[in-house]
Length: 401
Image (cartoon, rainbow, N blue to C red):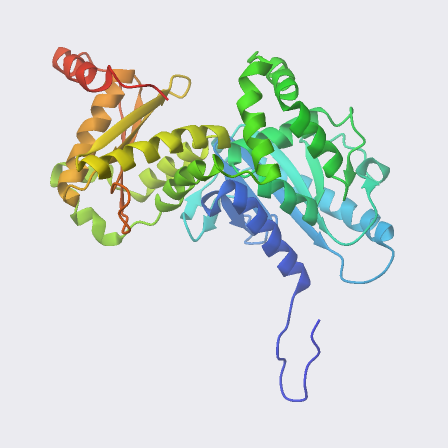
């Protein structure tokens, strides 16, 4: 703490708040700021928890503790870990009783929040202090109704640096919980479990999948392991393509209030802040390996569109989520590009027979200036022979990603 001068307080640093800031930034590195909410309030306008993450069907209740003094760290842990544990459980009860009615951040504004908004509720305690590695079970017996895990702030920062998507972080968190009895998990010594996870990721996630009833084979997770190893070793040759999808997620909420006027009148129903939040969520569901694969193909069509001077597009879809995503690279005037995007998105949706479709358009490479347009459409399947024929002509010969 910086001391006051005779005249004024030059800088009043709140170390506890700084620890919360750093914890929030670490979580935003994996989840993006769209899905991270600071100090949500209960119905009495009191703080329910330090940080809350709400992504898709998962809610993460986060409590952060910072040690100010230089006293014995384990004595501090015993007191503050128990306190944080009570606070996480208290926040979880408030959420399940619908006593946290809304969440708010600068990206999403104020949004309603109820227990029907999610399926999985987890707890995360972050300790910001210096200490030798220790086992949480020395101080706490975890027999609570929700899984609660403890990280040091330093370990969390390291984990989220490499496991940097919402999907991958939740997968890691759940695997860590499932394998907690196979390892002596120690706070300040995450490297032990992390190294084992990187080395044995396919087998570990296959076992998690088997327990959840999905039964995905280990071989399906080898690409996930490969891309994580590349992150750890600093080989970013392939990883750079995944950053293109990160840019799309980041741009989904950078909405100019004047852009609605650019949309043709018949397409303005596709423009709404809620639609952009849904678009960001859908892209954020992609694992790092899927972002790399899709981002690489997106880069290819933007490069080709720039080379030949004509628009190019590609599509992908998820049958399990009944969602199609259409990418378009085009130098057409903005209104024309939006019309093309809407038409192609509808046709791609029809071709893949999904309920929902998202379209994204931007300028070809190597244009330096860049704008993005987004379309979200959602409705039931339709029988239309003309659309069948046209969709097959446009998408039938494309390589699926």
